[in-house]
Length: 178
Image 1 (cartoon, rainbow, N blue to C red):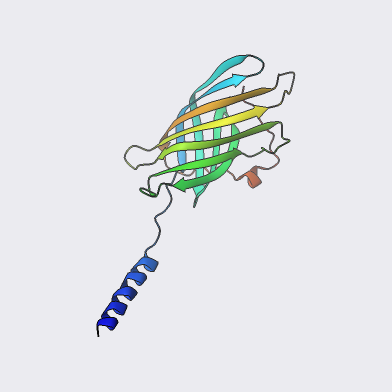
Image 2: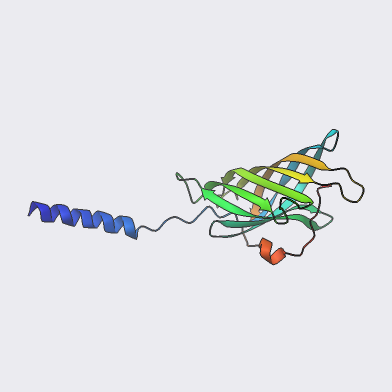
């Protein structure tokens, strides 16, 4: 009898564990406003600030697609990446890695980034803080340029802006940070 009770308890625990669905990943979908500050070098050190910037994010599962750096009413850069949930609060917090869509070892523009603070809440929208590193070859008479950018954004809307995946955006021209 004792073995049957222990077996029944084990079955209940295993069923509960297997039946428990995993929480949804922190959802970054929406429109974000903020800024990027880039420490750069093209033979001389200089800083470029992209104030009052707009970033758009679409997310499916843990995959994110970002478009950022609004210049002359055009989002200059498109990225694709992955959100990694915080095990303590996966519905709201996490980190992410992302790469600019045209980035390859031989592409004229290369950028990759890491969001070290993702905190999405219904009441305050959310926070997105990241660091990226980029390199662009000298094009159009410009010197080669490399830099590290600090990203700080707040979410202002949670509707999906429909950012395309890198495959859907293929054929697009690589843009530069100006």
